[in-house]
Length: 356
Image 1 (cartoon, rainbow, N blue to C red):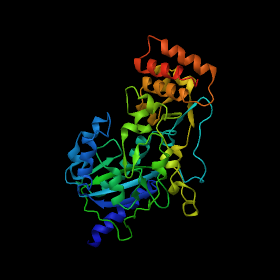
Image 2 (cartoon, one colour):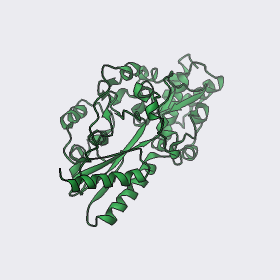
Image 3 (cartoon, rainbow, N blue to C red):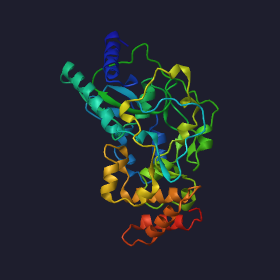
Image 4 (cartoon, one colour):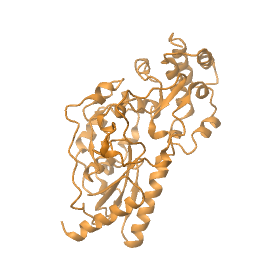
């Protein structure tokens, strides 16, 4: 690889670091190594109702098709949480529905894209006529594979990217470029350090995780965020008090536990938690206006009102220390003719569970 291409890689990475990204690397734009595995995943229906995953499959399995003339990719990692002490997983307060840590602050799509666009603008000014296409997780890109290729970490058994120093509490994004940027010599692939560990697999309450694969149909994150239909009672009982997303596989991962080598890392202030969870009684009584007010600037706005009420009803039904007010609210929702069947049925099952 010639030195000018490597220097281009260094320059691009430096621009990303100036924007405050914790990690940045460059890789060549080449077809995915997982195209056949991805096709089997879709054929087996493990993507659930996320039909959009099958859209633009040709682009998703070959990033060169994302934009004309793509030759290289800048990939960045943005920390939303630093490593934590090796303690028991976080639990919710009584009457509170848990939300995944990534969704407790500002919407990462906005936070990451704004800075990626700043990098792309700087590159366009320097390299007129070249192509720069920014992406986060809304574009048809296998961003974790690109991140691993760019030396940001390895893809763990829970399918998330793990950096050996920073862990996995990060968002990924990047820029597909027509520049012939090459990985700098100091950038190296990261070996898989999962070894024989199966903590994420063992800890998943719904049994969604197999080594290096997640069946979305059983994943709590999918069920609470993407699945817009009724959830099987068998799965409802294993969802605990999660009402938006799930962190269990990351909480138990030893690579997310505190260590001295990562003490210089800090999470972006935009991702600071405004709240640790949501009051279940309040969510059960939400109107559409109330949902929008709470989800302003939040990635949680993807979940519709009836989904959030369904999730809150399930969490209330799983509560170990029920409150009479929750019981009454569930009873009202189960009989409310102006509520969607999705909400009424979930509330009825929770009301009759004997746990509330």
